[in-house]
Amino acid sequence: MLDLTEVSAFLAIVDMKSFTRAADALGTTQPVISARLKKLETATGRHLLERHPRLVRLSAEGEAFLPAARALMVAHDAAMFPLTTLPRRLRIGISEHASGPDLPAILGKLAGASPGLRLEVALGLSAKLLDAYDAGALDVAIVRSDARQRDGEFLRRDVIGWYAAPGWQWNRTEPLPLITLSGECGLRALSAKALDGADIGWVDGFLGGGVAAVNAAVSAGLGVAPLARRIAPSDAVEVGRKLGLPALPPARIVLHASTRDPDIRTALRILSAHMRGG
Image 1 (cartoon, one colour):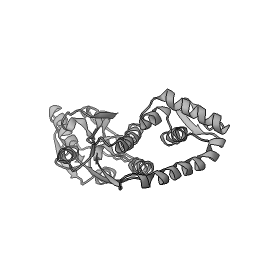
Image 2 (tube, helix red, strand yellow):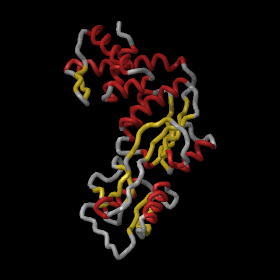
Image 3 (cartoon, rainbow, N blue to C red):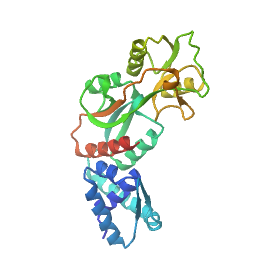
Image 4 (cartoon, helix red, strand yellow):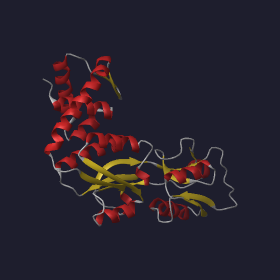
């Protein structure tokens, strides 16, 4: 008979594309994950994964085994779910600057791995999300730590650059048009301070309601936006050095969570692992 912990380890490696991130998601270590996979391969008599430097991928036998492995875990969850309490909700706030194009996929994997939780997700500014978290309106807040320099679970460090549309030109007789999320955006304040310190005049060229609006303004050539590469438009170029703009400090992305529920903590380990590698 198959050991469900070994099957779960296999699926985590496949989904995370990394032994290390799979270990983080399951709350264990990389050697333990490797040992579980080896035991599963011994039990099935199949070589399930191929490991290469910086790459983990399914073997042909792993591809054939994957649908059955997923079906097995779904059946297990379906059998266990009636024995648990009523569905619970997990209220997650994610900073616009900590999101990215892979966020829907990350949330989809979280929902699939946590059928007993109802996810409620809000995007916003780090400072406002922290206010909501402190007020008890959010269970989890994933934010830029420089919003209040608070402790939290470190997820990753994002390099911040100055992005503009290809071929965009700055008329230096005029202030630099700055594109940001809103007047209350912490990154806007940080960028404005850096420009003022470098004696570079600037003006709000666009104040958007979200990353999508900011990216549209960048692509339309309305100015320059301080952004992490992960959320900048795919066709945008980093123009900081070319324009002589001041370097911006990297953003530390951290997770704050107040729950002690073991099932929710498991879901958060999955979320953290994906956000680190996203």
